[in-house]
Length: 306
Image (tube, rainbow, N blue to C red; front, side, top):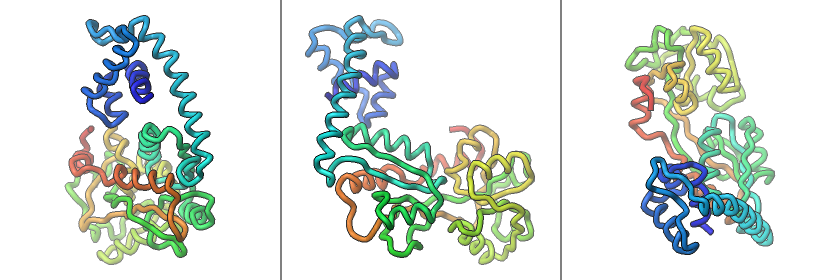
């Protein structure tokens, strides 16, 4: 079934390399799986003499019918797994909005390729709501910043996120190699609302470094931050990962802070242990949702595209 799944993805993506990346295997392994299918059916499924390759009539048939077979198999696997709630069923995750929606969606898709019998659902809420959902069992686990601060919950680290000064590309600090925290004294910043953990930690960081910033606006939504930064002369201290796309697009600038400031991200869950299905997804996230590679951070800080 996995070979058929890989072939369908190659047919959909029209790319061996992208299918290999999707499944976490090499292009050679993808070719071997497809060759095995061709031997099984006794006919060519791809015409490799053309660039890019095209599906043969048999390949078109296998692709069309194969998608239905894979979907039916996945549905059957999910139904069977629900009979054992420890290993299967639905994994419910609640996460803060700035946890990285695109990243989590990508990792969920990759995980479900490995465990198609599981249904992973991710819901986004404010931090306090995420912690409460984990505490009351409405979700298997939550993803929050500053995870150790939530009483009544166990936590494990996920990643440390580099914080930078975010500003418009025409801001006076946009081209700086770095900005000293103390130099933000008296400067107007957009800041997080009081109830968000990041607000307290950023303010403490500034005070410890001799800066008493003026918080001109307080917001609780990263997208609103980014829109306002593009339209005004304000700056803000944000996790680099949350506005990396805008830096690459030339819409915002990222200026390194000195001394460095990082935001810890972690998984929180109720006392006890996670059931096996949730533990598997949590372990997958811990392994694959780590910090940005250093070269990506450096490239973003220079305003370069990926």
